[in-house]
Image 1: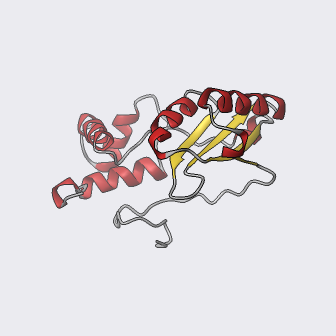
Image 2: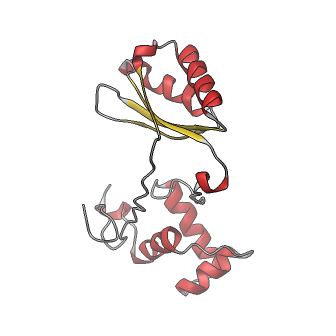
Length: 169
C-alpha cells in the first residue's frame, strides 16, 4: 500500500464507526453521515471506495449462533498441494456453512470453519468436501468446537498497522 492508498482521516473515522457502532436504522447512511458531519451520499461513496480498495470485506452482523440455535461447528485444516489451493478453496467456499476460509503458511495450508444443524450433518458435509476435492482423509485435520472462546478483536483506525483497541500488535 502506498501513502496515496492510505485512508484519509475521514475514511478512518468511517472505518471505526462501521466496526464499532454501525447504526441499525432504516436510513443508515443518513445516520452515518450525520454522525460524521458529512452528507449521506459521501459516506456511502467512501464506504464503497474503501470496499473496492480492500479495507472493508463486508458489512454484516456477527451473530452468536449457539444462542440462536444448537449447531455443530468445527475448524478444519487441510493439507493442499499449492497448485490446487485456489481450486480447493473455491470448492469449500461453495458450502453455506463455511464462514472463514483462508490460507496459512503451515503444513495444513488451508483452514476453514464449518457449521451445520447437528454433528451428523457436519460429518456428512465434511465427507462431501473430501470427495469433491479429491483429497484423502489424512489431508484433513478436523478440530470440532468443544468450548468456545470469544475475543472480540477490534482495530484502532488511527493506527492501521494492526492490533486491537488496546494497542496490541
